[in-house]
Length: 164
Figure 1 (cartoon, helix red, strand yellow):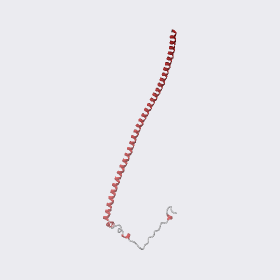
Figure 2: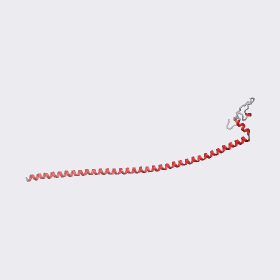
Figure 3: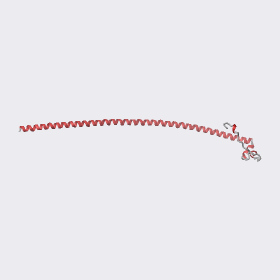
Figure 4: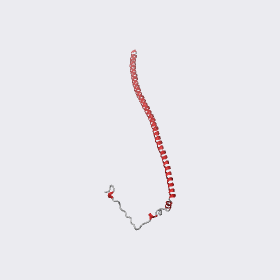
């Protein structure tokens, strides 16, 4: 019996050794799998960090671009305002010149009317001619002479510049 127990214990010892080896192998496999998972996790974390930094950089660039765009818009608005101000000043100057011209024209017109009335008072015949109408203003010029015939003669083209 002692021998039977010994054999059984030896078998149990070999079995235990095999089981220990299996467990050790499984532990190593699990460790290797854990390392793979840890490596994949580290890669994913590094990728996430890179993507976050890239996104942050793009957002900062976008914000800087928006600030630049706003600055450009302000400058453009100032330029437009300056241009409009210059145009308004030019129009105001034109209005002033037009008002001065109207004033001069009114004075000239008034002066011409005054001269006309002075002439009417000085030369009463001038008034009669004006009041009698265009047909009777100069009766001697409107008389027709049936005896004379008017003949039109074109100018001699040889003496004109550029004539052949």
